[in-house]
Image (cartoon, rainbow, N blue to C red; front, side, top):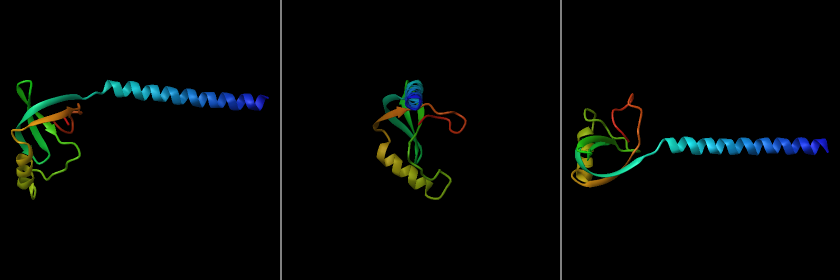
Length: 108
């Protein structure tokens, strides 16, 4: 009898901890949210960074999942030209996620 009670209490603690962890994850994910915008591309900074016109000012947007050479590196000009051919002057839809400004001045 006591052994069953101990197993039941252990399972109950496990379920309670799992529920609390799930609630914590849900709460924390609600704190960080993206804002979705549709805006014209006004500048191509390099192959993986563009500028869009948002609230009457150019907002830097880093393309998530894209890693291109920088301007001074080999093929940097080609990467910038390819990005320009694809999106310059066009309306793009972006999810803007805040990013710590220590590593990169802009948003993703």
